[in-house]
Image 1 (tube, one colour):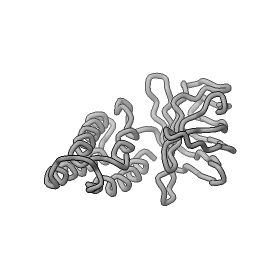
Image 2 (cartoon, helix red, strand yellow):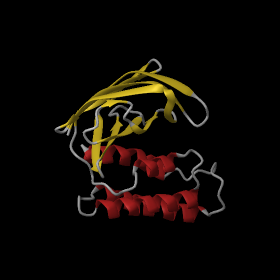
Image 3 (cartoon, helix red, strand yellow):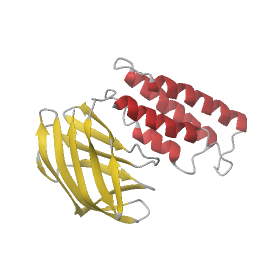
Image 4 (cartoon, one colour):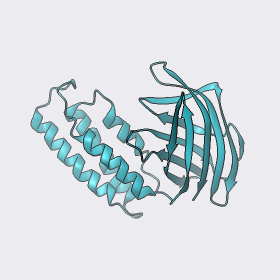
Amino acid sequence: MMIMKRLILSIFAIFVLFACSSDDDNDNTPSQCETAIEAALIAMQDYESATEENYTQACNAYKAALENQKQACGDSSGNIQAIIDSLGDCSGSPGNEVEGQISVTAGTLSIVFDEVSIVQEGGILKVSGETSAANNYSIYFEVEENMEGDDVFQNFEIHLISTYYPMDPNFNNTVTTNAGGVLTGTFSGVVENNDGGQIGLTNGNFDLSF
């Protein structure tokens, strides 16, 4: 499943990596931008084929190449930074195979995140979800291993047109099962982006086996 996640990320990244736009505010020449894009594409290919043994090295190299592209080409849309953020701290592994899905209604839009990965790191389950549909929607949250109950999510965020974060105390989550490779529960409430835009999440459910 992580291979599929990396593939989806890479398809999105291919479009982003070529976005050396004149709209970006930078003083570098097109050749510098093109060189940075080429290096990022090579790093992306190495990341795609990374194994358990070299995942961290390949991930960090990819992040460094993306940072260089940001500097050389600019990133007024924030898409390059979104890829960097999605890579996390590169200290995990390519992730466990996951069965199941995460679903939610954002406003009136029903979304199913059917490409899910879970990385176990330092006693934390790091859950990432993307859709196989033609959009860039994603969801992420963390839960302590074996922790069940109310309001146990950490670092929840959902990316739609932009990235939204929970508004305390108007966001609720319940983990009903968190043992034996099964993670189930619900979530709902109000989330807000950095511009103050708000969306209500309802009918949030996750039913995952890993």
